[in-house]
Length: 112
Length: 113
Image (tube, rainbow over the protein chains, first blue to last red):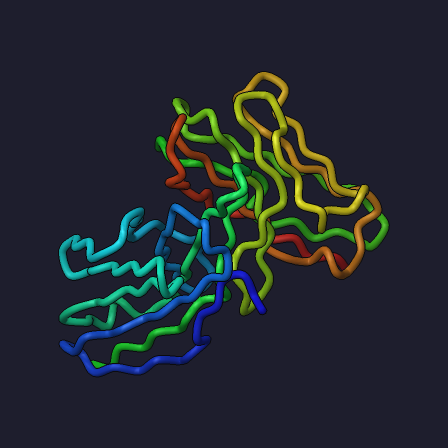
């Protein structure tokens, strides 16, 4: 079992729709969770971080965390073609170390 | 520009050669990370510095890889006796003290022929 799992996609949604990206993780004691966006040929850029159960909203983005289910998701409302990218889920483990584990990413295509 | 910078941006080398990459973090960030990313995969953790101390190193990192951060500012990553399997994007990230939010540099793309 991979430590952080994401559906590789591609996920295709029409412009204006809600895109839902999902991630599961194996370390039950993980405390810090992140979503990064990565355009082709570019480095990852942070979209959101979330640390406690529930929802966290920032503009068109909402991150959802459920530690009991070891599940974190990202919703993108009113998707735009410029949102087309790979979305990486990242989890910082609970062992007291500093290692952050990234999933392989989900490719999102927003069709105009 | 106050972001994380990396040099060179691209490096092509022949198998068996040594290469060195440099990372300059955001000035007030004392935490510095190196990652490796191959096509279709997420960044893979290599090592972590807090100030000048290397506090964590991936078990995946062979003895051919070494990293330094001598004065707690910029960092270098050296790969000795490069192999074709080392071809990847090498990413550096930094973060503020007491936070886990990492900011990535543009990366150095290594091609080993």
